[in-house]
Image (cartoon, rainbow, N blue to C red; front, top):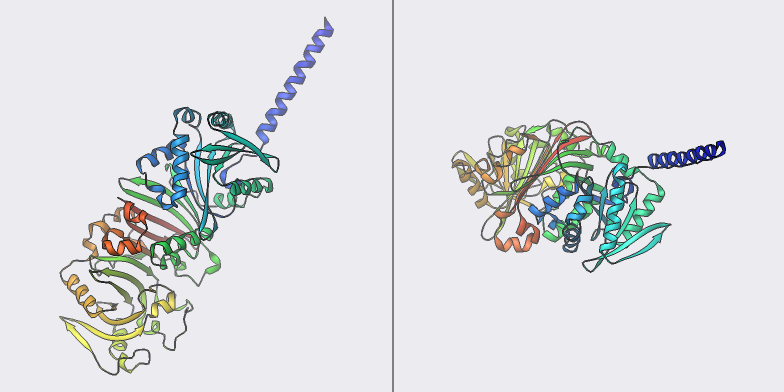
Length: 504
């Protein structure tokens, strides 16, 4: 009898040891996340805290993924609507987080990576989902670097799937799924560490997030701007950024992004964004109500602009006597053309006025020594011909290549390419038809603080149909009314960021 007790006790010890070993192996296995597994060339990542949230969001805002290419939008909707929206999958995936990650191969070729992520305690749910989806769709399995890859036929395309502890990765690109496995095998967590180093005092109640990595996002953005014929200065706004994390929320028709942006410290002294005094946005009462494509950049003082090395060398540095503290570029569209304007707020308007009035004696302005001025009440319009000196210094307002006329309004100088344009601006100012009265612009003010280092505003609906056909993507024509972007400083390396897109 004793021998049986010993054998039974021995078996119990063996079984318990195996159980403890498997438990230790399970608990000590590295917890996989998207950021520790995705390849380095991510341009942006959309994160949904629950898979259900992205399904609800996509159902209510069907055009949100139109920002991607047509094929990528179809891939996203195929996965969300054909697969993940099914009740039997939703019951399994109720504790999972969902990601969409955009990876750029070059300036005109991008691929999408999707992920289902959970803690190790819910890893069985991922395994159950994997077993169920493999039984529901036609599937073939192959291996790469001894890792199994499952290829499922969904909507006439192959969806490649790979499972690792706590994570399922999915993509319609076989090349990308191989890059994922290369990253997993290499155990390079640089992307994960980057995200973990980001400030945590953001909105913890948010259900959706947007992560942007500007090294790869800027080429992607440039390609989109080429397609729209838009203003390339938009890319200059992001040139000194490293990465951003935004809360993504929707209030009625407004897609609202609020978060933090990290600035590249190696560019210190070269970017105006390193001037960390948040400045009042007090120019709305100077711009006409139909002003559009507004870009405003504000320094603490003129010296901040002067420290930036000019992109184009010039014998006459107009910055030295215009004393700019704020520079605003904008457009006014009429039936026949788009007028380009430049507004400069000067720290020494009396000296600036003197130089402008006597510009016929200067080498940078070729006026043939004819003093050509027009008086409108107390405001004088002067005739001047010189190249756009703001572009030479800062690289912005490239569309306004030639400055032909100017007017001094309070402590500001307004330049335009036509006298009639300045006359219309003065008339709007006198009759108080300014941007301050624009409901489309001012209705967004609740989202933004009254101070910013950088401001950008574009109302797509203000453009005439003929110009829309030539300058805007189908996405903007059909789905977006306006956008507003604003950044203001928090520290030497962090900017607080707000972006709003108003959907149709």
